[in-house]
Structures are given as C-alpha cells and as structure tokens.
Image (cartoon, each protein chain N blue to C red):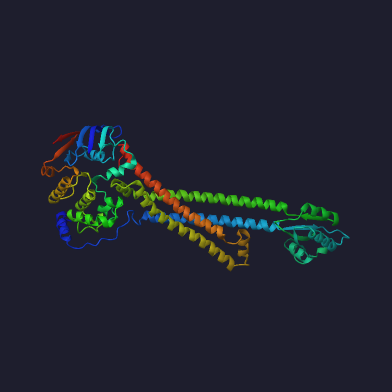
Length: 219
Length: 328
C-alpha cells in the first residue's frame, strides 16, 4: 500500500535526515516505527501521509508516485488514510463528538447516518460522557483519544499514529493498542510511531527502527 | 482528570441517553477577527456610500445651475439723452417674442432694477440720475432655443444701444466648472472605493489567518478545497453583507437627517448658504441604487477574497510537500 524506494530527504541545504529508505507497508500489516528523539519518525510519517515529498527516491501510496499526484486528487487519497497527529489538531470550537465526526461531515454525509457510529466509537475510547465537551476542557489523554477516534471513524485502509499513547496511562495505552489491533484484524494497515518499549513488547509485530536517518526492519 | 476513571465512567454513561447539541458550523460563528472585519467593512462602506451621495449631489447641483442659466437670455438697453427708453424696451420685448423658441419676455421695471443694484449702490437709488442699463429677461425653450444671431440682428436694426446677452460665456464656464467638479468627485469616489477594496481584502485575509488551523485540519481529514472554500466563503459573505448594509444604511440616514435639517431650517441664512452650495441634501433614486450596489459589491468582494485566500492557503499547505524546507 505504501512503497519507499531508496528515499532520501533533506531540509534545505542541510544533511539528509532520512537516507536510503527502502521498505513497503503491506495490506493488513501491523508495525511499530521507533527510534530515538529526532531520528525522523514524524518526518517519515509525513512522507507516508503525502504532506512532504522526498528529495530523492520514490514514494508510492496506493500505487501512485506522490510527486506526480495532482493536487485535486490528494483529498481522495487522504480519505483512505487515518492520521493521529502528535499535537492532536482538534478544532477548539467543535465538541468531541463534532471533532470525531468531522471526516464524515467533510465527505458530505448526513449527520443521522453516522451519529450512532460516532457515539459508539466515543464510548469505546472512553469518551462517552465527554461528547459535548470542547477540546480546551479535555485532558491530554482525552484529547489523544478523541484524535484517535477521528482517525478511525471512517475505517481507513491505513492508520498512521504518531505517539498515540504518549499522553495516556498504561491501562489506557493497552486498551488503545487493542483497538488498533482490532482495526488491523478488520483489514487496516497500522503504523504506530512510538518510544514506548513496553507497548511494543505487548505485540509480536514488525518493528521499524529509525536511527541516524537509516531504517532497520525487524520482521 | 484520571484517564482510566474517564474510561470507566464513559462506559457507564453508555446506558444513559446522551443529548447532543445542534451541530456547530465548521467555521466558528463569531470571534474578534470577524467582528473587527465587520466593523472595518461597515466604516468603508459608509465612506464609499457617503462619497457617492456627495458626487451625485454635486452633479445635480451643477446641472441645476447650468439649466437655470441657460433657460434665460437678457436684452440690455443703455439709456441715452433724448431716448424713450420704455418704448425701446417694449420694442425689444416684442421683437424677442416674435421668434420661435421664446416662451416669455419680461421688462425689469425701475424698482426691480434698483433692487438689483441695491447691494452696490445702496437704498433710495434714483435711476433717472444714472445711466443704468435696463433689462428685458427672455425665457426660452431649452429644447428648441430661438435663433440668437437672427434675434441679435433684428434687435440691432430696430432698437438703439441694444445688447443681447445669451449667457453663452457663463454657460460654457459653468459647464466646464461643473464637469471639473464632477470629475474631481468621481476621482475621490474611485480613491475611496479602491481604499475600500484594499481594506476589505486585507481585513478578510487578516481575519482568515486566525482560522489557518481550521483550513489545515479540514484539508488533512480529506476535505476538498472547494468544500473548505465554500464554508469560509459563506461565513465571510454574511459578515461582509451585515457590515456593508450597516454602513450603507448609516450613509442613507446621514443624508436623510441632513435633508430634514435643511427642510426644518429653510429660509435661515445657514440653510440658504448650504442649499446654495450643495443643493438639496438628497441622493435620489440613483444614489440609493448606487449605495445598494456598493453594499453588494463589498459583500461579493469579501466572499471572493475569502475563496481565493482559502484556496491559496490549501495550495501553500500542499507546496510544503514539494519543498521540505518549509514547515507546517
């Protein structure tokens, strides 16, 4: 679903922050992306989300070279990818429910058609009593769960989650991990960028370790 | 707040019916930037409508002066010892009336002539002592004026010391002055309108910059550029329409109040002076249609600026894809 072929990326005239990355993200796969701080995990996630282009090499998402995708086709491809940003990016004037429903709303769906699904997902991530609350009132963990729910609501083909358990305690982190695994069983390819070794130890999954701009993969 | 307790609480909540608030608009209904934009638009719309009204007023006044002067011509007869001035005046009047296009002819009597000269020569003037020319005021049909050259020739043949003043010099100078005044007014209107457009464009972009994060999130959750642009366009169009209407109505009220003041203080020196300078304080139907056009143009312009700015913002977000040196 995502193919990297000898990809390199540098910012301006600086050194390459990512070097010679060659890997693929197969359909229905589950993997962790890890590495020290500043190793380029977020940059790699942005390349996979098509919000950056490589300096060299090829990145193909759903079989299309991201450097040649016309601008008007990007929204359609992004709808097939769910993303959890490290800084959540919730809209402060919308309630938790409205934030989670946003991807469906922008697809032009009627509110009555998705209300039950959104409410059930919110209950599942433990925000059943926070549906009418605005993000500034939510705790960091609640914001994170709302951001995850927003990424999952339309059952994406690929889920990219940047430190999705960074602001939650261990029991909730396990619960969210189960959620990602269930989603994976339903057919979504999952890529979780994390520092949390204990989280990775709970699942026998592929590990992609980014260090010094290079990637090592342990199947 | 403890996250786990939230989770347990949340599951317990699932058995209760949850009432959701009505879905909020994607673009927040009101904020300081939106209110400021509305205020700026109302001020600029007020100034533009006021300028338009002033230009129309000046143009109407100039036209009225021009029309009043060109509606009349004057025959002057200078007195001479031994001349029967009254007979000459009557003869001149009759000659003037014999021409097609002359609608009336009035001899200005000695008393009226004295009144005309009163500001310069004072009261109690005896015209017999001074060689003051006497006048015949001829009213003409503006649409089909008489043959001035023929009338001048006929008068000179039959009347002594006669001079026909068709006011052409005055009319030409007045037309030039009126046209200059109107051109200056139109230039001022063009400047005010350009300032309005630029202010509206920059104020809209300023108000939108506060919503950059909304555009970005919508884009990243898969919204098409046209969807995002439509949401913002509708929101800012309504803000601009309210602001521009407020400005337009305020300008119309200003003219209405000035008109009421002019009517209430009619025949006072202040009112007479103001009326002489500006004419009646009325924009007329054309003025109100123009003000409405300014309101609509302002609102449409704001909506257009919003659309262009949002689409440009989305293009800039996507430009980051092409240029890794730019950060989100």
